Every structure is written in structure tokens, then in C-alpha cells.
Length: 130
Image 1 (cartoon, one colour):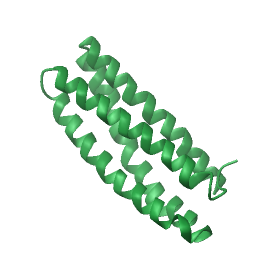
Image 2 (cartoon, one colour):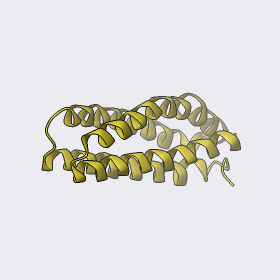
Image 3 (cartoon, helix red, strand yellow):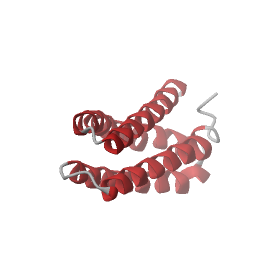
Image 4 (cartoon, helix red, strand yellow):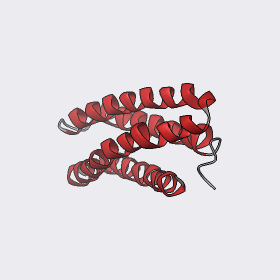
């Protein structure tokens, strides 16, 4: 399970970096880069969420039933991130405005908080990360 947790942690960093690059591209008015980086972000999200929901969380809860509530909360946050990602896709199809920046910033903040909670509450407490 260490390999899976390590891979997912690396993906957290990659998702954060991609979302930040989208934000910077929006701020610069660079539609091509924003769209390209967002497509990379979208392509990575669902497989990442599925690996956590269907593999890692199941293993973590099997090791320590007390972590079930945290795993369920993280799965709900995946749904929230899916919604924010869908909203961001719609925003990128329009002219960039302050609202575009706001939605990207919100996605980035939720993503960062979510990844931090997963790593602190699930990965490390379950002993799956070194």
C-alpha cells in the first residue's frame, strides 16, 4: 500500500501544480495554456479519485475502522471537487473575468485543503506513508 499512497501523494502535487498553472494562465489572459493545463488536470482527476475511493480508502478503513468517517468525508469532497472542476470547464469556455479567477482560486483552495486532509488524516494515521 505504500506504493499506492506514494503515487497518490505525487499526484496531489501534480494536480496542485496544474491548477496553479491554470490560474497563472488565466491571470495572464493566456487561453491556450489555461485550456491545455486544465485538460491535463481534468484527465488526472477522475482516475486519482477512483484510486483513492476504491483502493486506498478501503485499505485504510480495513486497517483502522475509526478512520471510516474521514474516508467518507474525503469521498464527499471528491464529489465537491468534481463539481468545481465542471464549473471551471464552463468558465474556461467563456471570456476570462474576475469570476473566472475566483472559480479557479476556489478550486485550488479546496484541492489543497483536501489533499492535506487526506495525507494527514488518512495516509499517515493509517501507517500507509513513511
